Image (cartoon, rainbow, N blue to C red):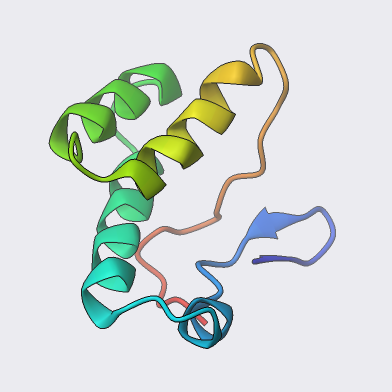
Length: 87
């Protein structure tokens, strides 16, 4: 989810994920990946690779990482504070 101007990530769309039938475990893994991906340490490309190795058996997370990788120099929206609770 994105909000405000300028836009920033506000967290995962938990209601939408539940409506689409994602399990509690899947949502938990997505939240962990989200927090690692947008942590303060390292560059985005380093964090993408870290998340890829940690979640090697999660095709949904790899789909997200592939989207980020294909973007090349395209800017992506980032959260203001990844430790803020998801809405």
